[in-house]
Image (cartoon, rainbow over all chains, first blue to last red; front, side):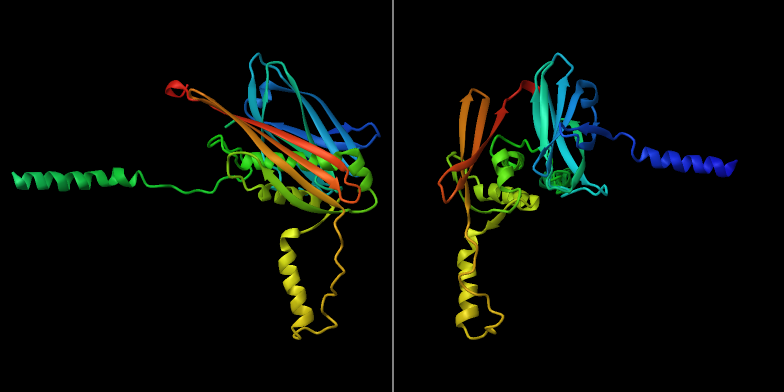
Length: 130
Length: 201
């Protein structure tokens, strides 16, 4: 009984490692796994409308469309991080936080190109202006 | 009377020591990727934004994608003209762009700022008599650049009362040396505004 419970825990642990990753599909059928991590105010104020990926040669391009849910202009910061097939971050510390302003109810597309052809997944981090 | 004055002064000096040491400067490491808003002058965040957008735009441009599909063309970086009224190290911007482009594996670069040092090293290897001729680098074998990367940085500054608005525009061009055609051109605009508020509201 204890052994089965222990096994169940391991399976759940392994599954949660992939939890939160969604898939963006490109027009060619290429699939890119991604995750949008919103902290603070950005979680409530911003809605992820659409995530699309495309290929520029062998470089993956990602586009995340966000909408400002509130009736007020909002300034936040975002950063894309890219990972290879093994889950290792490509060029850590090479991408900086970018400030962006979005008007009330406006939609904005945040786009980024993978740093090199080995990129397989990406994470978009959103944070409120400190 | 004199003793009282001296004693008061000494007492005040001793009593204020903890407050004075509280005014000491504190140094700490910060995040080099964090957004910097110290003032409206050109800053690290502007440099990072420009480099990221220019690199992404250039590498994703369809004719550039086509050219870099089978081979890695050679580029040299010329000057970025600073047309603003500030001192901006534009070479720092192109250095970051060059790093990102090289890391993408799509282009190769020749460094025109190192020509003199390379010449000195080649002269040393061939003429000094100190280097084994079999291991010396052969002169006249360098690869010629096919493209030139150059551009402009301009700004528009407007001030009215306590409000200051600075608009930067960075333009980067990729020129094919043989044909003289500008194969790609990219632009990044940045606006920074400084306002003074009453009582920090």
